[in-house]
Length: 359
Image (cartoon, rainbow, N blue to C red; front, side):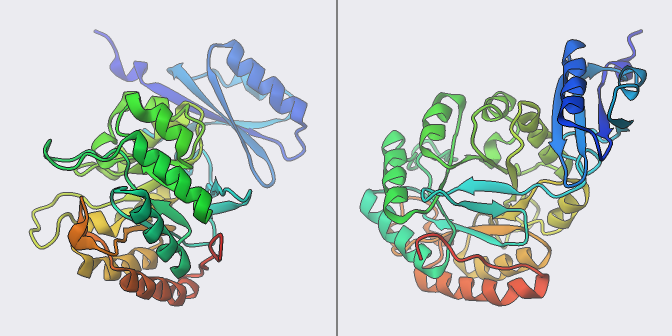
């Protein structure tokens, strides 16, 4: 009988001494790679740690414990490895580059607000809304160029034309862009135009896409699937990190429950749960959870109160004309109100709202 447990990939973590020199770290990495394994160096404030993945069964500790600069070799016990706090205790802060050369930090002391229309409908519409949310204090622009819809007859997005519109609006406003890659066929195009590549709820367990996204060279916004557990969300993030991309932002966007008073149920308990067991930042998407604009404001505040690193909301100045999800889009005046509430709430939870680019 085959012992399946013995075949389960294990992860070891090599902790370097505080006075370990760069050449010591390089020697450990070479040793790991010489055994056909993957090395994942993580530079901390005081010491460097190096994760080992790709092995079946336990790695012999003696292979590394005697190397210069090594303090200890420990086992990571969670089913998810690279995303766990056991692997990396400090919070990961994902920096999204801005056109002006600065950066928006997600996961640190700042609260980040991402806002914009559900779908890119035209250049005029996208620019109009972008300028409005930017004036209110939004830090990044969201907008779908490719739209995975439940019905094949619903608006599917403008595709590459939508990406070009988002790029033009970024140039005109300075707002970094978040947009979704719906499959591997469009990933290269999305990567070319987007500052953050979004993997939507329907693709959270599209492992082929996750692997490719892990090599795309852009920060990734990974949304929780509609029926996924927190563990499944973290394991999906593991696919991305395992391919070499550490810049993953998780997103709680609501899950399906028995409730019929909202589109989905925003699982606020997932935010502190993720914070406890993972170093990755997590934001909330109350728009897709609620499905109604009246619920977006209170759910946004609640998400910040439980520890979310930011929120992503939909805004449209003509929701009755919106080609998708107009019912859940905040009106611009309502978004102004939300931003003011965020500024008031931030210091209560020991956070701050940075001044957005271009203001």
